[in-house]
Image (cartoon, rainbow over all chains, first blue to last red; front, side):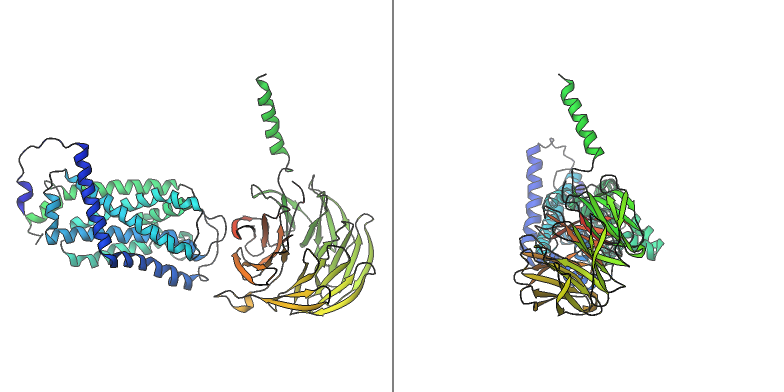
Amino acid sequence: MSAVETTPVKAQPFTVGQYLVCLKGILVREGMRFLNQRERFISSLVRPLLWLFIFAAGFRQVLGVSIIPPYKTYVLYEVYITPGLCGMILLFSGMQSSLSMVYDREMGNMRTLLVSPFPRWFLLMSKLLAGVTVSVAQVYAFLVIAYFWGVKPPPIGYALVLPALFLSGMMLCSLGLLLSSVINKLENFAGIMNFVIFPMYFASPALYPLWRIQESSPLLYKICVANPFTYAVELIRFAFYGQIEWTSLAVVVACTAIFLLGAIIAYDPSRGLMVRKQDTGGNG
Amino acid sequence: MKAGPLVAGTAFAVLMSGSPAFAYMAYVSNEKDNTVTVVDTDTKEVVKTIKVGQRPRGITISHDGKFVYVCASDDDNIEIIDTVTSEIVGSLPSGPDPELFVLSPDGKTLYVANEDDNLVTVIDIESKKVLAEVPVGVEPEGMGVSHDGKTMVNTSETTNMAHFIDTGTNEITDNVLVDSRPRFAEFKPDDSEVWVSAEIGGTVSVIDNATRQVKHKITFEIPGLRAESIQPVGIRITDDGKKAYVALGPANRVAVVNAETYEVEKYVLVGQRVWQLAFTPDQKTIISTNGISNDITFIDVATDEPVQSVTVGALPWGVVVSPTK
């Protein structure tokens, strides 16, 4: 376990090319892993599609009509929840990549990555980019199916939503990374599911507009406002219609920076939680 | 030399801001707050609100676009609005409780349904005189006139009939039984058929204008909605006679019907209790009035997608679009 610290040789600085080789390696690995696990791809699609086909169909009449920005006219419930479901894919995917970190650590594959002479932050960033790229690909696969279900945002929206998806994906994946640094065991992912994913997902405008939540519970509304996922969903929703929601953009960027910094510190071999865990013998 | 484009630009800007004459204007009658809202159909913004008489419902515009006529139902007259000054410049003697009317193709005569008196009143616009009163069924409402101007159809809500009236003699020639509470009558552009909507019956009856028989009944089904909440009201048919739009009241949708096969092709989501419809003269857009949600929805005719909803006054009822830009 202490192999990480026994690299006292001062290496030459890496060239950009070498960095790219490393990034490519991680990206390809993540991509391969995703493609090889076809059931993972299918399950990542099935979840939002279930919501779209079944949940949305049931709630179509219940949630009432009211025009809220960015919509210019009345929209069906399916159309309303689509950005939220895109966020859901990013959220689950971000957490799944955190699961993969725990898995890697438990199975020892992590060592290959962590003994790499590249700086830790770069390795984490590469891992992050790989995770986000895979989740954004999943979102587009979902959007294709949603199109045939009658959810048709303006054509230009498909291009404009890309930066929003990427940014939101970065935020959620870095949150996942941060969380993965504190989870010791694979089994704890169930806890993440219950304590992070579901509360974040439900206490957001993904399924119902915030004004409606405010109507029923002011406290819940405050929780929603404090939830970073809320801003990811709104950023995506507005981007579909070619608009930038500046508050959401600011919150998502700030949260990404905080989570990422936290993850980098947590994974830093000299300072982070990993060390502390090793000290206390936590990383069984 | 340099000032030329600048002056021209300023003049253009002044013209653009000063005159609304560059876009089709939609006039929406708001039943509850006694106003007519004027909406620019290009910018989709409310340009002005005109105070009118009590309970404005039926609304139409003269063929030259100079005057808007509004049924002030509770004031028992028809008000004339000058579209340039937005002032009420006169009124027409409509008879009691005018609800809906139709302008003859030559633009000279108004045919008015008087809901309380079971009459259709024929008014000459120029002399502002009543030319004739035609007794019809109970609670007359829908009014349609053929494009050749020879036939007028009135629907009576309680009698459940479409009355065909010869405009030459002002007498009923045929009565056709349709479904419960007929609300609106619309001739096809070639006058071969008359489409009559039945609010309670939930159908649109297609009446052959030659035989005066119902040749087809269009029904509507929206998954998840109770049949009672589907109440057809306003109907508009495109100039090429290929597509019809039917406002479905509390179903909050406008049905797009293939006017040749009578198949419903699509339901377009609009605001609550959609009532009447109007095309822009270029037929690129159709506008619906949504009574309960106090707005109108612009629907793109090419794609049949709702584009935008604009809040107008309280309980918007009817809509008409100026014939020229």
